Amino acid sequence: MQIERLGKDDYQECIDFINMVFSMSSGPTNFPELLPAYYQETEVSMQCHYVLREHGAIKALVGLYPGTVRIGRETLRLARIGAVSTHPYSQGKGYMKTLMNHCMNVVRTEYDISHLGGLRQRYLYFGYEKCGYVPVFTLNRHNLRHNELAAEVVLEEVSQGDPALMDVLKTIHDDQPIRGERSLAAFYRICRNWSNHLFLARVADDIVGYAVVEAEFKGISELIATRSEFALGIAQAVLQRSGGQSLAVTLNPAACDDIRLFGAFAEDVRVDHGGNWQIVNWQKTLSALAKVKNQNLPLPNGEVILDITDTACLCLRVADGNVSVTETKQPADLSGSPSQMARLLFGPLQPGMVDSLPAHSGLLQAWLPLPLYLPQQDHA
Image (cartoon, rainbow, N blue to C red):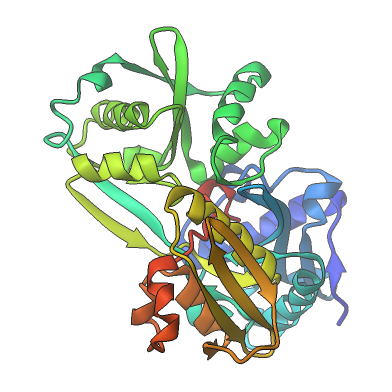
């Protein structure tokens, strides 16, 4: 059975297949509405999908959606995996495994990192691990009752992707130290992924930020403002507009000023994992993330050598405010599988809760976890 890559002419068949499979397993699903950034009737969009057919009909599909993620000054090639699906009557034939193995060959050849959602144990077999950390604050009306700035914030729902407005919002978005790269043409569609709604925020005549709000105002999946005080005001304005009593707000783990301010006001906070990650270029990824963390929270000087089994042996060094990650053949202070190292380096748990740390590598307690993160709007 030959793996086929779809094209523009396969659009309707592709949509009908994945809508059917996911509607049968997860409830009514319409992928063009759920993820408009990925499901366009174009050759580029459809070529992201690999399928297996029986008698000419699609029986299994895996999507590989290319992108880039910006971490500080570094750009990493990102492979997002999604729409993993097998026809209910064709399960147990190994179709999903065949397609995933094919896509993993592409990932390990052409990309630096890869992300997907889904069950941890299922995707561990393909080299993924649930890791990263995402702070989620719960705000209620009592928390923000005395925040005067919130009264100045005016929300406007954005119902179309006006290029001039999207350029303003994209400029605010691109000021983040960790972000998915978004083209101006796709910015609005990305903000509408996962059936979410886009609201811009004004104070007087100035646009000061935006919020991507989940259906029925259950939470904010992306909140970005020109100042932390505006971010807090936007969150309260969304809560007031919702008519509810509380609101969950997801923040970028590299947005330290926002996190500190929300921590001072919020009723509660939890730390979630960031999805399933596979690191292909460990050196590049660790270097970029450690430098971003060092800019926000200066790291103490030291050196630790990590052996990532059958993958890389790397020396992490901090000296006089500078971070470096280099390959080495020196004896390792700590060794582990890629899965173990992903959880140790990126959280959400502290490293000492993942593995027993030798005395010398206890320095990792001060350095880790590193803020591996991809905003939900950039998930596939």
